[in-house]
Length: 186
Length: 409
Image (tube, rainbow over all chains, first blue to last red; front, side, top):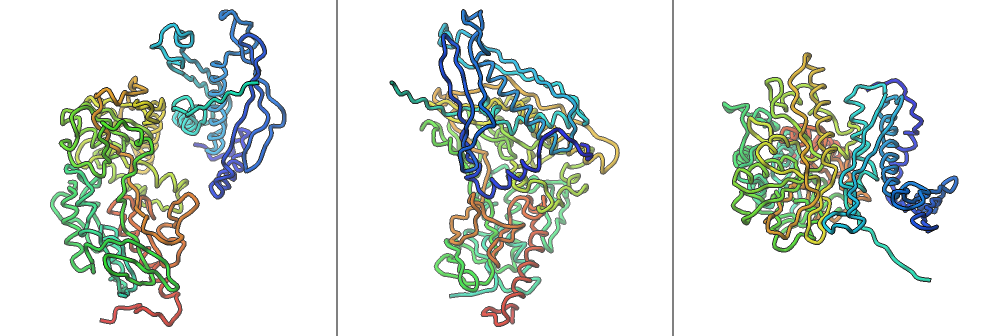
């Protein structure tokens, strides 16, 4: 591990300050993330993210983020966006890579380049209802990281392992989560 | 109401070490013990258990191991016998269960047995007597027998059928091995764990951790004390062999990820097994490198943990699993504390055993003042330093003490 100043563009002091504040006042750490999803046509829908709750108040991103979801031509759809399943892979990669950068910053490791390739194996018989024995979820998820950093191989491996340990999306994919869905009619 | 200068709650190794230090300072005190001396060692250990620490590490204030097997490992009964001898001159009130501790204007009142003790100082050395069972246990199907490691004695206690051991701490790996060798089909759910080889470069791993100063690391100098204190116990067994996940898999124990939930009678396991194994291997690598850096040269490296193609769920109603053993940790029982000594998360607030209430101390907890505090061997430094703090506290009190500071006899 190096002790020279690394700059990965992560404000670790702010993160550690937030951790301390949340330790003192656990309610500050109670966040609610929100997205809306609106059907457009066929399997095409649009997700939007703007506001969230946290630090004991309503918060907002600096702008609205939009995510189109659809299915490719092979599904007889119009391919207006990535599939929701692929967006999950995007989320996993984003979560793990953000974690790698943060942990590297805290450990004083300068990153040169980080690239992840995320793959999921999926047996479509599940979502198509073709075989009741096959679940709808992924069979397996694989992540391959290519990392160039000023640190030993073991220290880089430890970055990625620590990032998995703290990752929200990794936890969501590897552990069960209770989900409730309410329906209201017009 | 009987009064004394210090009430020590618990007459295990920590309480007795404290008693010895208080006696050395001529501080009048009593030890209130719910059962007999070394009660947990007598009543909350399984039959085959041996200490994780070699005999030469069985050190207490004024006591060192002098037998002919310094590299051996004591049984729990031998520890109890040893402590019994060590307690000979200690003012122990056995069979005296403490039911309430409260603060008064000038100290504390301790309700115990039929009476109430009053004292300006209290040292809680009550040990880790409560088994932690995760909330998911509530969803176990009723036909599955549930037992915490603290209540486990031997395989005959469990009904026929396979056993799910939850947790791969020191207790988890030892109980899994014993159950497997007794002929059970054992599945062990594995979250974060601390992998250690029993021996390294011809020495016991704890000899190295002692020699290079790891066990002397202070609580107030560790990066993350909360984490250090909540780590699962080391995957060690008192004996001459290593007992890691590879050893258990070679025997035939089946591994799964951490038990993440129980839904509709099915145990759900986390898909994080590969990462917790990687974390443990990397952490072990750092430890061995640190030893090598200190000692010079380098030693053997264990094979990386083999990560099996583990099931993500298991039907608990099929009859395959007859019982679950929770090796999910032990914690102190503070239910009798009737005073504001806790933080917002409900944890007893203390700095190395010095609580926020002047005169109230706690000891006998993992990584209390050193990493060594986790072991019997840490009781000496903890008791020495806390008794010094306690004596200073007594000296700082108003001169007209209602209690005798010094023993007059």
